[in-house]
Image (cartoon, rainbow, N blue to C red):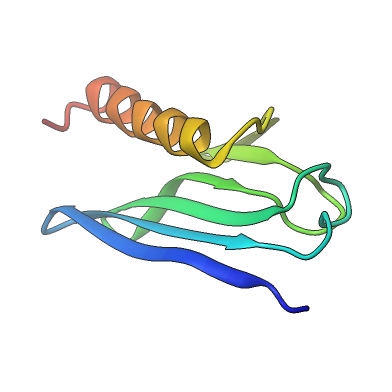
Length: 98
């Protein structure tokens, strides 16, 4: 059984800002993860990815905030999306974007 794409979406916030969201259901957990999802959520501003949540094989669930990386505790796709949206709002607030 192959991975099943659950959704792929681009959300345009402004001419210079967008989010790209990709989520797949896997037949078995990816190395480094304990759940059956593969994801990559990115927030791009002026051509630079400033926030990214992903779980690349072997590295597990984590979040990039600028050049910093930290572990992310995945519990569900719904909470992942909520956390990502909250991170975007925080980044915009801290960086003077409406």
